Length: 225
Image (cartoon, rainbow, N blue to C red; front, side):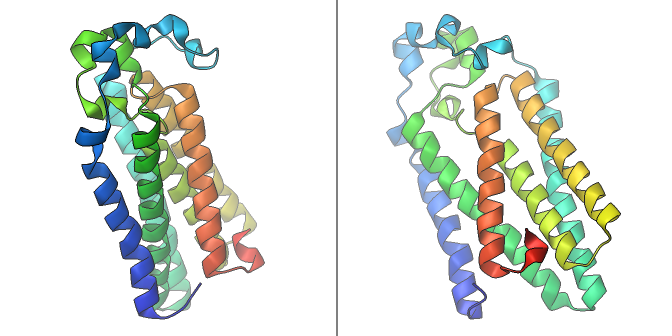
């Protein structure tokens, strides 16, 4: 999907605008169901997977989930810089960064649309539906945006490392770092009471899928497989 610069900019801008539009629909489309019917947020109704971890609310875990998410993003930017350095071309960095933006914005738009559709309460709402169930922002549990971003950024970093011609050992290191950042982000989001296990699993899978699709559209060579 190389195309013209205008085409690339449109493919970057449109999902961003869609993300912004969908985000603005939260207050009008999301109904605070658990505030009106607290029984809807009874922990006893959780599925077996999500019931494995007791519902909690931990601001420290919440803070560190932002850190690990950002580290995954930094890894993707670092690999884009490595590719640009290898080819001595700022254009290669711009291309890799554009891919990262396209994956991020596409995921953001899709994530927000799924939020509006599912309107799943965050875990901490189950602790006290009357106190925490009144905000539309508390019904955006599925799927985890933090985990999906960590996964997509890690995947983009690994694919860029292939295009940069790094050694197999170096690429394995990039893959391991990305895996740790993604796993840590998901675990911390669950520990913080922001997401259920199924939310972070779905987020990781969606981030990986979108990263693979958009990278393959840009470069169908074996180096991104």
